[in-house]
Image (tube, rainbow, N blue to C red):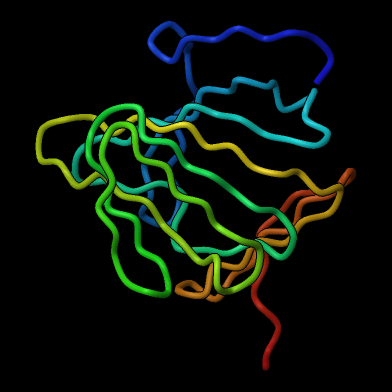
Length: 147
């Protein structure tokens, strides 16, 4: 992070993302160009949608803090319902597999996504047999290697 950042999720413009059935908006707290050790984003998910897809990280840990709305978070242990004020932490590795969806029919889900940033990271998406590789000079989705 190169400078002090003060952000309010209600005032920030976001980037709408849609891929593999997921639809959500990301509002950066730490600009992507400044991320070196930690990412922090506000994420908004409309009713009936989810963010990112079911995945796990090789190295990075994540924490979600629910700002407003109702979240259904699926993990290897099943589904947890979270509400405003709740937080959930995901370890690196398959045991940290997760996906978050908006569990409300009417209210937008808003949460804070905070996580470690490794110089090279691989995120696995087992339901679509893909992996995302992110490094200083590369970023892309590819097929998982055959087992």
